[in-house]
Length: 387
Image 1: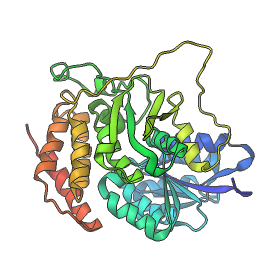
Image 2: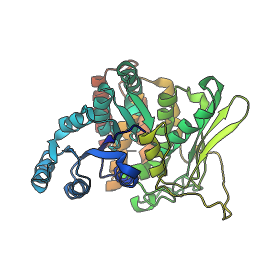
Image 3: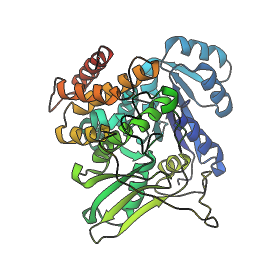
Image 4: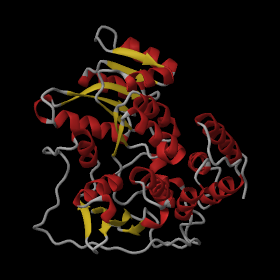
């Protein structure tokens, strides 16, 4: 680590990744990391509490009314409150910011990440939708500005760490692990009457509702396959998925000589978050440790693609490229929202996504504006979709 404090901007500070990031910052020795800026949507009370504890230079609220309330609550503290998407982009690009944690859920996180990459920042990426929607444009922008993307998702962090065991030409394939979600082992008939409460009971991870539903459908793994394609420059046929219910092995890298290198740890997001913030060095972490004095078993099995067809959509997006990722991501966000509000059955989440992916106005070389247009079109299609 450098001899000075690293300033960290956290986009999505009130979500699960944001809160874990603040915990990492609090427990780092000697003030090595500082929460320089916090960005949130509209959760006033939560972001005010965070600001009073961490005293960042800036707080940014996407919602204008929320920004006014937060500004009043923080009056006299020296914390400047920024307003709207432009405020979040300003925070992400601030010259004093060293690393940006991109943790705003969904495609809403793309704008802040884009601003950070334009400014040449190192981005700790927890928002997989950024690469799902605009992978070609985002990686191209990073290459032009000298910015760097470091993975925060536990699976991609595991691959990133394991890849250090060999050269890029020595890698045969990567294997993403999946807990299987709350419905592992169930049949499609079992899932016909699933409720939101059922789907929100994840067996190993504590996450926000959207990501938890994605885990239940295995759509999260489809999105992670796409993310791995862009992060590591691998074709679809060199990215595989295996079900691992214990969530101890976070992913694996197989090398051409048959050696397999994996990263293991208890399910605790603070470890990959800290690694992205302190890379290339490692420091003592607040994350939980494996207890090697106790017996435990690890299980692996192939995914059930018949019951959980979402996974195949991720591979289809890689093959098609262009606007396919934007269509799939927007359709999924809209379908999950309908499921959570009770207007769409669980099994129809993936059906709606497949329909939109097949029928969307495909463009093989879209601009950023085209991607936003496809995003809006796909959401509208899902809002009026019926099986």
